[in-house]
Image (cartoon, rainbow over all chains, first blue to last red; front, side, top):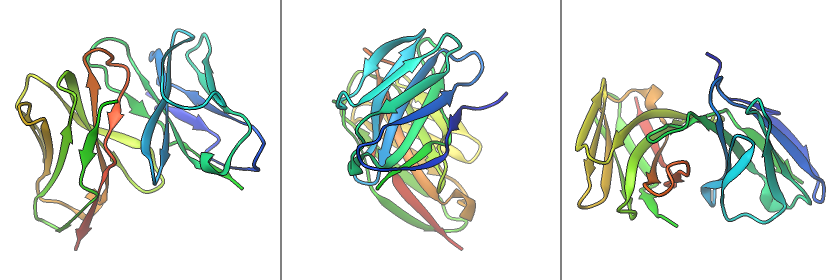
Amino acid sequence: KAGVTQTPRYLIKTRGQQVTLSCSPISGHRSVSWYQQTPGQGLQFLFEYFSETQRNKGNFPGRFSGRQFSNSRSEMNVSTLELGDSALYLCASSLVGRGNTIYFGEGSWLTVV
Amino acid sequence: GEDVEQSLFLSVREGDSSVINCTYTDSSSTYLYWYKQEPGAGLQLLTYIFSNMDMKQDQRLTVLLNKKDKHLSLRIADTQTGDSAIYFCAETPSYNFNKFYFGSGTKLNVKP
């Protein structure tokens, strides 16, 4: 069974640009969540999608957005990039129901210069 | 939000046992997890424990939960150099089990 797949793995962007990251969940998983990992802030929850609807949202500015498609694949977008957006962006997928565990992808390393 | 705290570093010798500790504040936590992150990689689920359990053992891993003190620990027996990584504890509250709260991670260094 294939794991969570994230693309691209590495990217460099310039301040002010926008970026789109993609995540394909484990087959059969309908919930996809996104996390930002930085050395200073650790792992912070961005948002979670289920059946194309955002169910949960963390405390990030509106520049961070996401969506989920009917095949459960998800994308997240960051507009007007800032230097502080440099981070590892992790996607995780899970089955639904109580006690579900989340499985992470390898992440997308974003560097903003 | 809920706080999950871990010590930042732990250093042990190969063959010794490692104990990584975690404390959390949310008394409604239902599931508590341990994840491992190797350099340049995502998080790998190691194990998890339901809040009505005190202990769970899985090969070299033992998870102990003290719900009264809101303290979770992960013991790794016979620690190997391949166990060197960052270990994250995480919890999900009963009111929102789709949202995970992570600790800052404990960097385990295993010396040969």
